[in-house]
Image 1 (cartoon, helix red, strand yellow):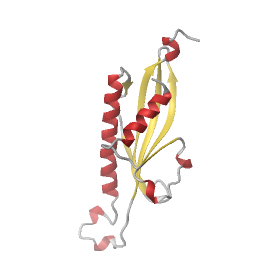
Image 2 (tube, rainbow, N blue to C red):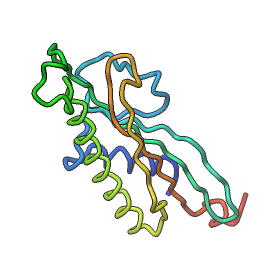
Image 3 (tube, rainbow, N blue to C red):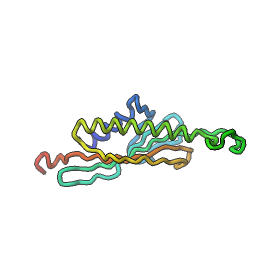
Image 4 (cartoon, one colour):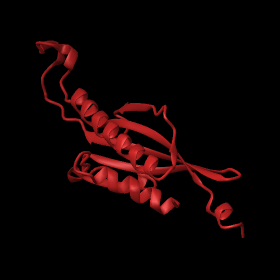
Length: 156
């Protein structure tokens, strides 16, 4: 498996009907037009590091799941249950958490079938109001370890 094949697996998984992100992007999040309303929910893949070990390469890939938070104009003090606020932030976080959980499970199954390892203790980190247009979501980092193909081929 190569870097390209890992990114293809991530793309295929994130567009799968069980996960169903509207848009999948790759690279720098600053290059994505987050002001467009029609691209959400969005999954963004950012490569973090690649560690070259003696017989393996460990790729670290960040996946951010983002969606728009809708607000109503009600005064929080007038809400029957102010715990839930005047927006759908809890709904966005709940929905995106499930989507990422399913995606990680699918990716794990795919990699196990190919004898490739992925870290087992994956942490999802929430974020709210991180971007200018009231987006919320979760971020995960996947550490995927593959055999070093140059070792398998006998070096250079």
